[in-house]
Image 1 (cartoon, rainbow, N blue to C red):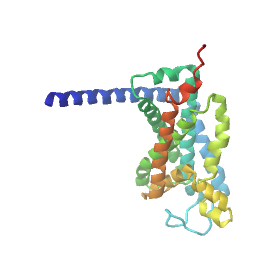
Image 2: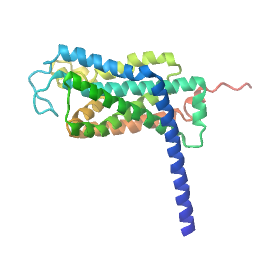
Image 3: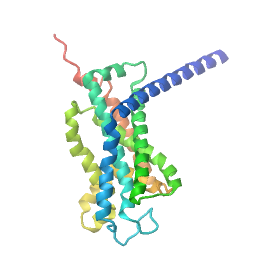
Length: 284
């Protein structure tokens, strides 16, 4: 009995070590690609910084007289849009990570990765975790740059927002991982940006409170924003910056992450998903 238990423990330990080696290998590959593509970090920061500089200057007092949670006093618009811009970084980085998946598929690297002696969901989870780690680092670089624009937060808020950034990054990364199943060519990502990324960003509280939509009579846009998972990612980040948990947002983000990742695993299943659909037909 003890021998069998020791053997199971040894097998489990070897399996965990194998998974950690795979995670380290995928993370190193993503990091090397990120470092070599020097414009990638710059492009990830320039877009939200332009929004911060332009919109903060034009709508400095654009929130009206109401004080909305989690804020306890009136704030400048440059402070309000920071959580949404952090979400933009996570959304854009998730798209770039999935873009590399499509590129690897075209180059044949994807099949090599998926033939590794590990369950497919483990390999996809390693890919997702590596991409999320890089996107979270980019978010903290952006938070540091925001200080120059007057958008500052308490130091404890920087630590409190870490779990929210990780969860939101995993959800958005899993979404793009799922979409990469159906995007056959790199060129098709331009359409994905127009029909997925931008609608998710604009139909959310990233730039303005959703209550203003309803008060302005845009009930349809308000309802669409409520079914947008990006809405809850932004709110989770916003509340976390002020050391507050938004339970509904947390539940939606966790649930959406599990759903998107499950769909991605099914999509990359060689029996039901991508490989079966794209495999060339065998001659009779």
